Image 1 (cartoon, helix red, strand yellow):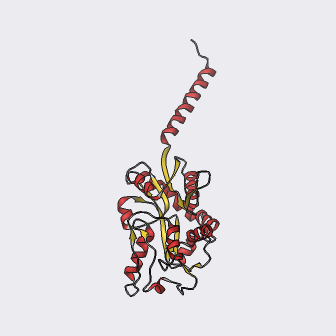
Image 2 (spheres, rainbow, N blue to C red):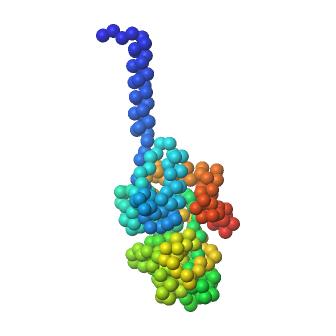
Image 3 (cartoon, rainbow, N blue to C red):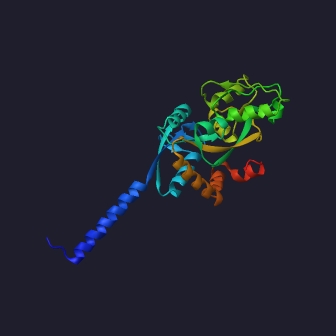
Amino acid sequence: MKINGKALALITAAAVSATGFTAFAEETNTAEIVLEAENAPYSYEDEDGNPAGYEYEVLQLIDDYLEDWTFNYTVLDYETALAGTTNGRYDLDAGCKFRTPAREEAFLVSEAYNYFFMNLVVKEDSGIESLEDMDGKSIAPIVATDGRAVALAEWIENHPEIEIEFENLASSGAMADEITGVEDGVYDAAYLSAEQANAILEEAGYTDLTITERVDGRDTVFLINQDNAELQEAVNEAITALTEDGTLGELTVEFFGEDNFAVAEELGLR
């Protein structure tokens, strides 16, 4: 069959277009993202079963920034999410996790995409305003793999003159149980963020508890499966850009009422 010049040009253009599309498809990477289900307002599952929270919003911004990556999202409990990222079922675990030596050994970790400030939840008449005031008192147990437990243990180690009764849990427990322990008089304080505490207190309806000013702080990072250095590099590039242009700072104002990056700089955490 004889093909005229115009038809040949159209066929050639279509072939180039198809080849370009194939090359683009081949260059697009997919990352399986897992978020913790019960860590509002950082990451949680909304009433329709969809991912929600600050972590999810950050990941969507990163996904939009990375033109050659597509993120799929799953919401699971803390331990299942962690185990799934360890064994490669998921590529990245999001759930307001601190940078710790153990995590840096077990995972690839991202740059800081937020800063987490710890407060104490105490009885209103306790007189407790800081960790220094906890001498001879108890803090509700936290699971050992939770970054809060690591941060608190480090603070206690660095302040041997303050004797705080604190133990790690062997398995994950609900943060609400920590606050309930304070309400019931089992412990003198719970150690978590004001945002987490407010969400729990609002639901529980306790009226005799109060939240102190900040007593500690840490950066938070994404945990990435050790075999996915390419994803770590891409995520870090996006976080750096979104931090430098102020996007993440603006998002923290939206979620937490202030620029966490600016606060972290004031506290010497950056």
